[in-house]
Length: 292
Image (cartoon, rainbow, N blue to C red; front, side):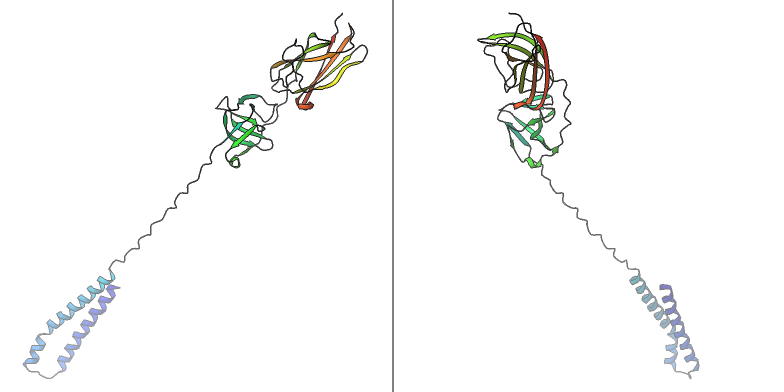
């Protein structure tokens, strides 16, 4: 564009000079002043040329003036939002409570939470009244605690819900053998030894005694809510409410109207909950009554 403009200006300049020459040739003789004016023509030409160059330079300066580049606006980074970490939840118990690998007494016991102790709660059960806690006896492990005696401190709503592991299949419930015959005052007893080889805790029992020769029931079936005696020769027989995993206890069965030398069948049913509730197993033992 500048080149075209420059050419147009120079072309107008030469047309102007040509016009002056034509006028000079056609005009009549002039005086000396006119001759001096004619003599100054080159100066006029130079003046015109200089002005043309100045005009073109000014146009070039305006055209080539750099256009300012817009500066990018700074990007504002979002401020990080602080998230609060939930406060830990703890619990304590009003009675010593076993902690197991699963929620229920069918599962193996791995620890015990005592009255004056506390434990951090990690989660809660999806269906039962159990808490998943840091094991009181093994802090690097976790276990399930029954919530009957538990008091929770903290917002339990923030705890995740865990689905308990499948219930284990119990092994054969218990071992039973004849321990001794025992007299206490006016009552004779047959004393049966009970060994609990499982990881289950038993609470109640039912006792039945039948003379196999006559078919007569000599005792029972009778519920005993506290059937487990700690020793085989107590008088009167002692009683405890539970028989714990891998423990031994004794069940006393009263003998009434028995006859020497007769065969007897003692049938014992023991259960995991009070009043023969929960899971129950039955075993029978055949033995012969001693002579008088």
